[in-house]
View 1 (cartoon, rainbow over the protein chains, first blue to last red):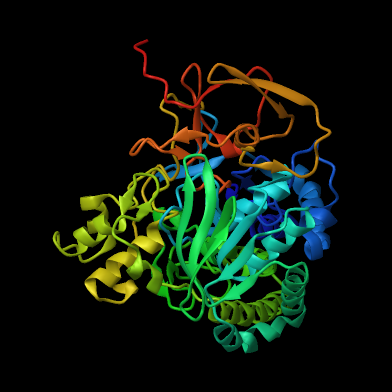
View 2: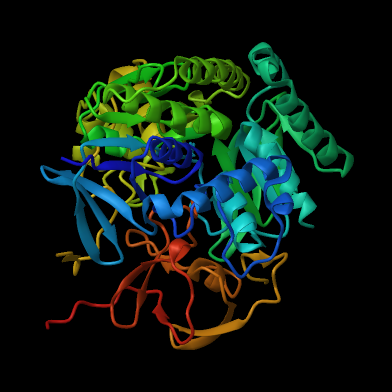
Length: 455
Length: 99
């Protein structure tokens, strides 16, 4: 029987995985939720846009160019399904939807490269129009040549804060401030790990220096308090500086994010074993160094399993494909595997350094006022989750979800899930890994009611 | 008050005209529905639970905060749907009709 191999995702990991399978003479199906290949960080603009890659991807323009060109070269050798979302798993295979047409895709092995979203910490006022994730702020610029406002504040933590702020400044929109919850002392603690990639650190320092020179206020060790605004938009953010003084910055938009959150739902539906990863303070599927999961024939690569960034995703995609080939007794040169593992170990050290330098400020969840919306789908508040924790005695997040509905809405907890778990854990007085993780359920994304099954 | 989003480049594209809540708005070819509405106004839809305006959040198909409807009741995710000439969009859910 011919092999039916599926690669889910066409970002850096999915593209390199598919490429390696093609090099072995195989013809994978590549499923891409986007209409154009590239994923998020190397997301492509629509075809009728004219900006050169240098303008979109900055220092990473050469990598973006290569990833896009290499994929175009693969096209005749793969079965590419753009605009297609995997939403479930059945006995017969993956369930995918494009528009309102559902298809079943049988597979003998699968490589999932589903990527990540921003990790979000809710905040009073964060549902006001004009508040976006950091990723969204960047996508608006990269894929639509728009900014989220004329004087945005970027607030949260992580290197993306500075990159996005710098990109906005270069596009002619000067940020009102960059507010980082990580203090300078905390950042130094991650420096050793980060120095494994001195070039990347130098880029970050360069962005910060440019912003400071242009007069953009950069504050470290801040505590976000609330977004202020009206029905028609944001008017400012209130925050506390490192010395505890109350501050307010006028702005017309907010971009926020605290590192990344792996998209792990499909691995969950395929019954992969999960473990809590203290380094990234979130649950993720368990994988061996090459991307094998606890399930035979299921492989994971990229930010959808380990948040190590785009360069690591390229190597991990290729490595997962090598693992798949080896498991099928298709020869792979040992040098290739050793080389990929080696480059991943450097990138892994760097990611560990970043996680230390820009930690997830879990303590902010415990301090959220009771009336703060945590689940933005259904407006479930921090107080509702605390009620589930105490009055209703929910010891874990799925119980709290059943009783008070955090994570029950259409996004299935993608935006609120990690913060909701922190609110619950704080209210129960237990570490966050003791309250579990939201179980994934099909359909992983909303399906139209009138969908047809493809013949 | 200006619209929520600002165009900073790529403004030489072909204009596209669509109808939103009965009013014509101008967009550009290659815009998503989200971009078209937010370069013309301040919101996409209202939240079902508190009636307050929403304007999307993640722009990558994850948060499900940007759903709009066609006049005939088809649901569209505004961040991942490209505008077309003469699209007829409404920002409030269309009541279900018996076939």
